[in-house]
Length: 106
Image (cartoon, rainbow, N blue to C red):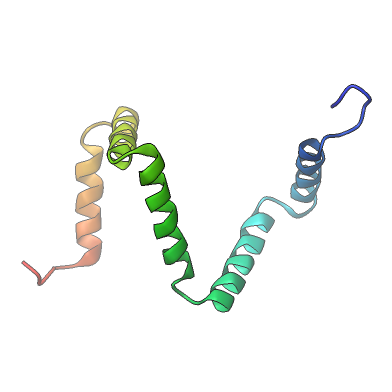
């Protein structure tokens, strides 16, 4: 809290969010997020999220540099490997291959 006992906007938002979570549960946010996402897609078209994702990705590439996604992918892969072991990727790859069935593009 600030010196006079008044809340900042950030603090008020956090308190309000906590009260809503307490009253309606954490799943409430997922439900309203889906509802809002559907409304946006309906209003702006199905490709809207793809378009803004590409714009955001291009902006990140522009500001962070050419190798940014490679670096964070490597870092994420190392973290997953440390947590689950090196054979984890092999196991999930096999599971993914089985769920897709036989591929006819080879």
